[in-house]
Image (tube, rainbow, N blue to C red):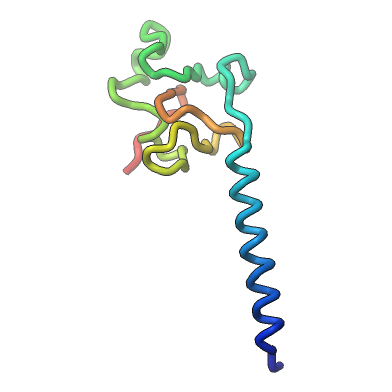
Length: 104
């Protein structure tokens, strides 16, 4: 099947537009609030320094935060990014929850 340059360009523009729109939709994703039921269950705090060390002391290690968790998929330097535990919502890169798993 031979494709014309016009078909290639139209397909490429469509793919580029879809990618741009999906990135924009992701950028507008809601942030997880500390009162969210999943956040409450996992002990999520937007600031890792505010973790209840009496409750999570055995799981929390100083310096651990969302940005260095293997479940966080935001870019380095981003203030917020997606987390696999909060499906479709963004967490604070300086936050922490009991699901923390250190990046390898």
